[in-house]
Length: 546
View 1 (cartoon, rainbow, N blue to C red):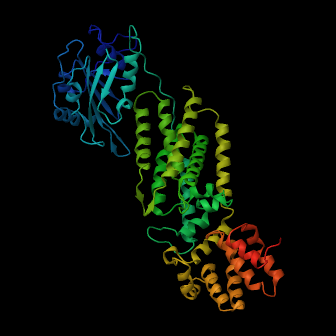
View 2: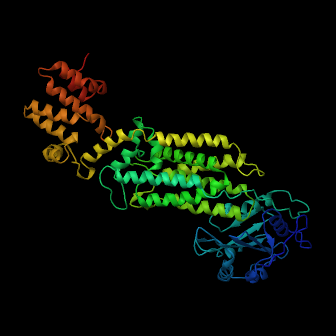
View 3: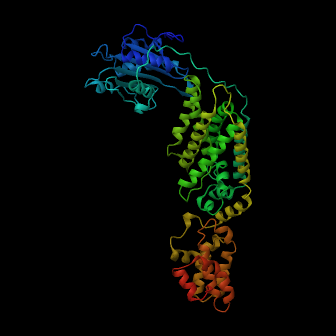
């Protein structure tokens, strides 16, 4: 590389004109890690600039070409966008890879000085061929008199170093800008094998094996457990959570919808977990995992439709990557920060896109919730992590959070025997694809459906209605009692109010001659039906106590 390194305390660019362009270059060198000069392959770029700066951290390479239009108002950048892009391609061998992704070369052409009417139009063509292009060129217009900054990048004023330059435009100029000593990198020794990360992955895999081996009904596709299996093992299903099964918020994040789902989450967990385990310690890693998992589960509960069964450690994984994103700023500008930022961004941005994976819908709500939890705890850690400390403080608090969370994960599976019976019931009812569309079709197909799905109470109810119409109260009683025998199980997978309709029908069959028994059976329905046609029917037959 060809650069002019400046020693701490040494003047930057002595002898250059006292313009904002020079002042901005000095500040970029002093505070943003740039050096004067460029790599040899970018010499044609430097020849067309008044000042050429470069920042290289081992992963990315950024080249700034500054045109000082305060000194020479007529001067413009002399290369075409195509030639500029070719220079970037020639420099690509200086950039590194993060998770097999080649980092880009950034070339920013900056005209600094009074804008003319054609400035932005002239610089607008300096843009990359695509958002994922490995050479990202951009055009910038900086007008010190108007304190205005324009660029044609995707993120506008959020593109580094736009915010930094914007502050320079609006703040009083500093005198005697000199190079500062580089900040000391935070101590981050390698902790060796990531035992906690590997342990969590092992637990996730063991639970998935149980989903397949002991699942309700056969698995399909890519080792995909049935919906009944996911419900039985504790998947997050809003109607059940609203009925009091809140432990599903802890069990759901440990389940997976198929082998592909598990594989992707384990890979992502390893990538983030092995970094964080050495970066912040095992105690904080456990706390971040727990907070991300619960945040994702709560968002799934709040924003997903009632029909969706949500499972997966994605919320916890997004929490890890979001924490990494924030903690990158604990480190000075350089390779460490770039690697952490790129690692997290390459996962977080695609995870927020509404794509489909392994035949199922990606739970964007869980991803967003986990990421939000990770951002919050990342901000907390950034605040309490002193530069001289190896890890963030308050590891004891993190240990309590982690142990409490893991204990709740384990406790969440204690309802499994009961949930398993509910899951077996879910597998035994008429599937949605075969469900009749109305009462007439239910009555027409009732006998066939009873033969195929003897545990489903719905065809028995409609067959009982036919028997009541035929004055066969004994047959109707038999069908209704059989259907109600497992009411505690099926009301968790069907509309719970259906049980009241069956109780009303059964009470009506008993009202002629067995009134005391009929009233006892109708009691729950009387408490439910305070008004409307069902209440009128109960009152007409004197089945409710007055």
